Length: 68
Image: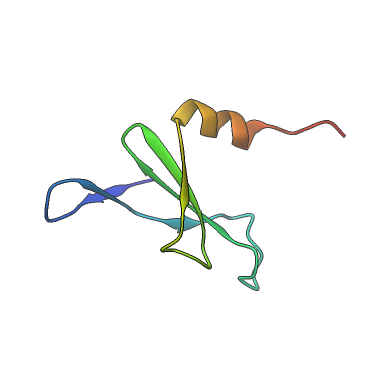
């Protein structure tokens, strides 16, 4: 994951769509990382709220397999 600097010098997240999102673009999440934070948002509402997770919390989330 990468980030770009805005004109003010603060990092601007570079969002990318989850590889687990469907090809019909109906149920998609986007993820972006800036130093120390992983952001997650609904791709259908890019101006809406986004979760802010620590890198450790994000790693735990994506590695969780759940009980089957």
